[in-house]
Length: 275
Length: 215
Image (cartoon, rainbow over all chains, first blue to last red; front, side, top):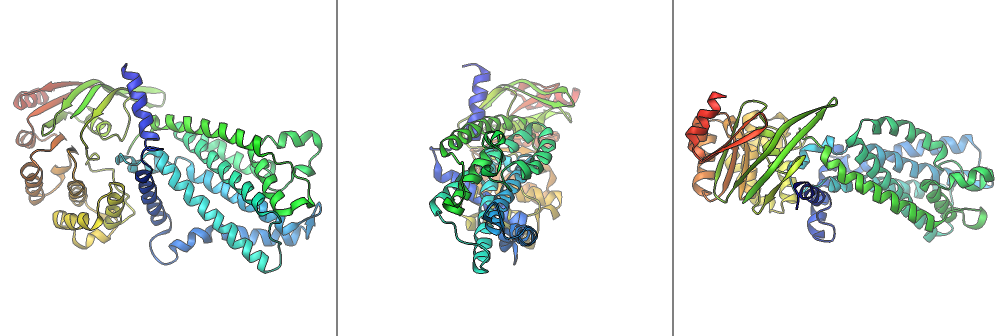
């Protein structure tokens, strides 16, 4: 076996060493990273832990109250608060996961001193924490708006959950790609800023496919985020509105993007320079 | 056994390629003590980091049949904003060792007292050295990768390190990067001298030191 192929197999084993092989060891490492991440980001005392949930809520609640007040009670026959709630909270998840993954290896290079820790473990821990924090915000704000009578419960819960599963997958994939890419070039950060901003307009946050002219609808639906939004809103509003989510397409495109992300991630390890 | 085969490491900075190591090969058997000599920038720390798996070689490969510590140096391995205790907890978790046992050992060996509940970034170099070294001894590895760190401690720490590493754990291997001739003579039986990215192996420490001094 030539030196270069040995090197490559060595590299791969450092990135995804334990999948299927030693699940217990990997979950132990990811768990330790999670606790460390919580301590370093939120501190150990008092509000630290509550802040994980509080942070996204502080974004979400004022924004949703203001918009629903400004924009009236419904749009295209859809209740405004429910529409904004299904749009804005996943947007927060997308932006937070993406931002946390920018240069996630470089800022954690000290962790790679320990062989047990792979960059994939670091990715998993950060991603899990952001997703958990965002989902708790979804739950808390949902309960709040519902109990204030500002919003109904989702009409079709299984569909709603399915949409959220795709949304989480999409956010994780974006985190994987942007994280791995940012270790390779500073362009990743330069692209992420405008992309994550423009995403507010084209990503499906504030529109539904049914509202678009037919010529644009097909293009919009190519985006995994728009697909996930369609499914979430299908679950939220039931048959009141026409939705265009296609789980088969969504699964395929996300699987392809996941593969690309994992390949980029495998490559990223080579670019890491420890402190 | 740790075997490095033709390892090359290149760094790319501003479009230029800098070759830190160029086709370096050697092996260290269980219980063997290898010194890594070389002037500043000769690639000693790079070599130690590659052996520790912190960075990957550009070419070549490293084979290991025994466990090795993380590179014990003045940098890396800890989260500065967390306390000594929290760093210990984290390391105990990832290496799957009971925290109580590790805490007890580190408290005794590192003699940091109440500093263990202070952030690691407030530690002096000597304290960091004691902390890192104590923690790695508590985890118990077959091979210790040491980048100058023992030299950073005071006399008492050096004496206790010697006790722990050379008397109680005489069967362990050691790969030690250092500038200090006396130190290396006392600890190591073989040496690799790094110069311009190339490595020369010597079985005679005195000869290795002589070559190093003439660089």
